[in-house]
Length: 521
Ligand SMILES: Nc1ncnc2c1ncn2[C@@H]1O[C@H](COS(=O)(=O)NC(=O)C[C@H](N)c2ccccc2)[C@@H](O)[C@H]1O
Image (cartoon, rainbow, N blue to C red):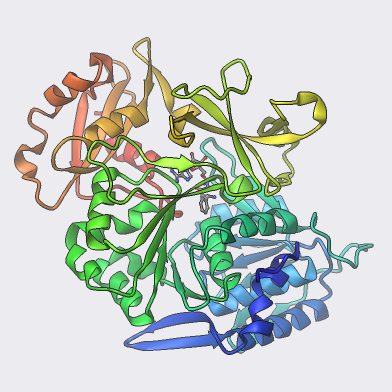
């Protein structure tokens, strides 16, 4: 039975009472060593951390920056914050100083919690400093005296966490998620029956990316175990697979890029790990040639395409068709999880139900964010009047994502509204060019950008070849093949073959890095 509580820690710690001895977190320590933390032990750690935070004088609403990768102690720290009404703000140990400084400047935390010894020299402020680990949470610098807060009881509307998204444009935005929003999303997720009490959920995303919070909620709310995959090992296919095998992971969650090198070099070794029975991915399109290779390596696994934005954590879970039809053009993102609804709205702002017509997805959901931290303008641009009944006072999330409704009633994501570019007087959907490139023999991943060139902007394609491709001749005739399926203005003027695509800290293709690498010719 999944807890109906609107508070994050109550939902995720429910198994402490029902299955205290089951593993809550299984940590890979390397060299065949694992550390298992039971639900009872996790609960005790949460209580210990909460006592330390209370003793430090923190009160409801005080922000706590949490710098850590996912671990039993980090999960205990975020649950301890949750139990005291302290919004936690996760940042990665890999995050550059200036990004952490921006988050600290924006949120004014009372406390900066760090897992590892040592401390960033470049981030200063009048916040308190604490360190936490398996043996407890230690305040090494007292937080400054707090403002008087007239709060004692936690409610569903209190803030559980802030996630700063790099945002496709400029200044990072702090997505404010309430307890009620997160637990509403979790309850919608649990209806999909993705994992059960005996599962082990490998999580590969950094804690600053809410995919990690989905994984933690998926596991703990189901009485399963979280298996944090050490981030440095993700770069080495054999080491990544070694973690999955040695921990007995049954569910592996991550963005599509975590599979790129595994599928290119170690598909057979992946196929040999027969404990894996589910994969969930999100964040961007999973290139279909790679998805076919994943399906071939894990024929019995349930593959779930999870779509959504940090402003509602996510919103749909759609099983990948099995078998994958040969002529499949794109994956479905289905319909929103129970309790939420995706509406398509046309350019005039009118909702429509017609099939085959592209509209912008607007999300009606109890899991919507409270707003962007300290940014009312961006908030009102994202939380817009319900297009079905604007007079109702209801707000929906304007996602910026484009999709059409198929004959089966399911939605098909076609790209972001801002990835539609005007190119040589024509409207080009870069995702469409990428999709056509992926249909070409031997290409397993592709990203297309418009880059400035002396003779004017140019469509530049960056492609990755599959293991069998003859790289020497792969690009030959590629433009000619594309010209048969794309209008001439959509055929990239530049084609580059790469061994991999650069990714952001959250694991998505890093378009800015590609643009820098490609630089002005
Ligand atoms: N399955 C998809 N196919 C294709 N494009 C997608 C997909 N999931 C997102 N996206 C894209 O990514 C955008 C959201 O980006 S984000 O705000 O950084 N958040 C995320 O990417 C992760 C998201 N919070 C999440 C966390 C946990 C599970 C699922 C989703 C969406 O608006 C889509 O454009």
